[in-house]
Image 1 (cartoon, chains in turn brown, blue):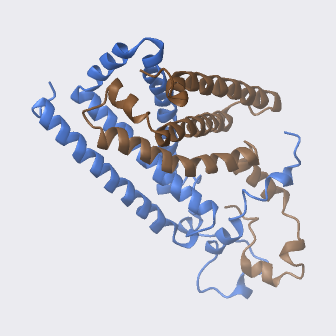
Image 2 (cartoon, rainbow over the protein chains, first blue to last red):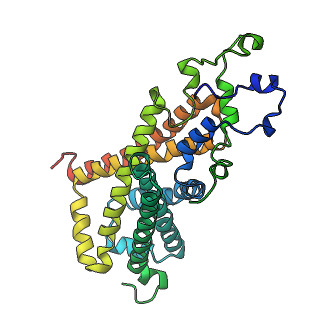
Image 3 (cartoon, rainbow over the protein chains, first blue to last red):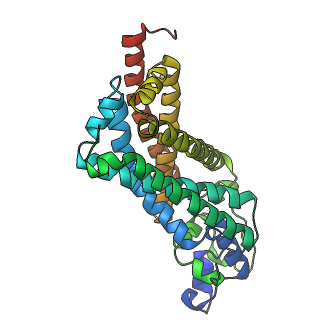
Length: 152
Length: 172
């Protein structure tokens, strides 16, 4: 926190109400550097997917590594995916975890490299293509259970 | 990307006005500080995630390292599991036979540790972004870490009990 931060006492002492006072350029810069570099929608979706992942990862880890410990093989997984609950959870989990992972990786990269607008945009587009392709691949792998037809 | 700088700020800095509450010297008359410079102590400015200071710095670094590890694991995981459709059941089952080795069970436990630390530190970040518990951010941090440790203990008991029952307790 730098020296331009406005303390509550100073806000009260000033004649101009805080709401009408524009933020200082230094404060804007700092806020953008802190969290705005990846875009506000990415910031929001990272948190929305995080909340879903708390649920999805709990289901995933408990069902596979606690309830099915020692029994994990193709048959066990295929049986579990016979229920719609696990198919829906797994498809949503795949989408959420891909967004969260690739956007997280993007934020790490943007913290050190690709400060320019072109580089940033290229990275974002490349990650979207890669993420959507992986999601399509995951859907294909799950397809026998999504349709529940011709599944082994 | 053509967004004006101010447009990005409404959500991200929503919690900042409350964060500034910690940036004051206690028991000091307001009049003494008017016109002077604000020089909070190190402890008072160590608020929230992202500061390169003390515990928050380590939490941030471990959060990031765990995140990168989990991204790499995610794609390995998708690759292995999808062999069921790419190469057939027996390929996946032979992979599971390999992962049944105690060393892989221990690696799994490390992975659970990374997931739990990342998840619970993430919960802390969500709470800070919502402006919840900023005044007690250290208690929130230790509370989250407590939940992570207890959950990890649960998985660890399961993992070691499994190794003991199926592999005689030795790393063979």
